[in-house]
Amino acid sequence: MKSKYLEYIIIYLSVVIGCIAIAALVRIVAIEMGADEFTANIVFWMVVGLGVVIYCILTLAIQGLLEKTSKLFFSKSKKSKEQQAIAKSLSLHEIRAEKQKQVDRQKAEKLNIAILYSQRIFAPYILDTDMNRLCKYIEFYSEGTSYEKITIQPVRVKGLTTIDIFHFGWNIWKHFTVSKQDEIAIFLKKIFADHLRDVEPETIKRHLKDDELKGIIKIQENLQEHN
View 1 (cartoon, one colour):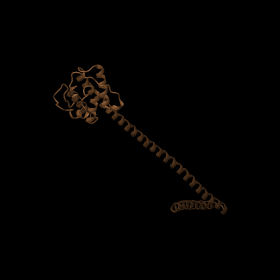
View 2 (view 1 turned 30 degrees about the horizontal axis):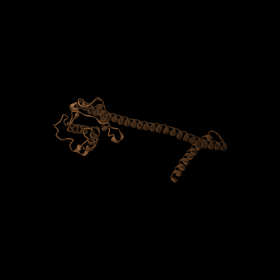
View 3 (view 1 turned 135 degrees about the vertical axis):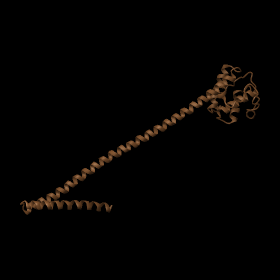
View 4 (view 1 turned 45 degrees about the horizontal axis):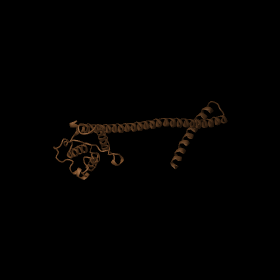
């Protein structure tokens, strides 16, 4: 703070000295031109005062100009940074939205494959109403819906064996990989309740992939290849 005051004193003292020097020269010129001492002294002090006033006016004008320029520059700079931040934010939002659309498309495609597969293999063995329910239950399973939150009406199957149901369950579980095999075992037990009335979920889980080549429904590693 003291150094700042000292800086101001030096500046103003330099200005005053400069003004006095100029006023002294003007006073000498006035005397040489025939002015008396009194008039020369008046001219001297007028020049000193005028010099100080001019300096003050110029200083204020320059400071005002610098402040306006500074505000204008930094304002544009700030607006530019804000616009860049908004653009970046919008860009990130668009990226996330596009990514979510991609995930949704993949889920929809995967579900469609599973439903087409189920329709193809079950069409000869269940009624249309049961087929519609089965497809809906497969959609619930793909979404990880809790069975406690939905009312399940068992699907009746004729012409397929228990091993066929097991293989179907394993294929659906492998296709979605949204849960452990315990969940698909419960899924089969509830959906095909009449067919599996004497089989416990733990038994279903242990025998999902038994005798892979037996039965009408075979074990398939990739459902898409067989649609």
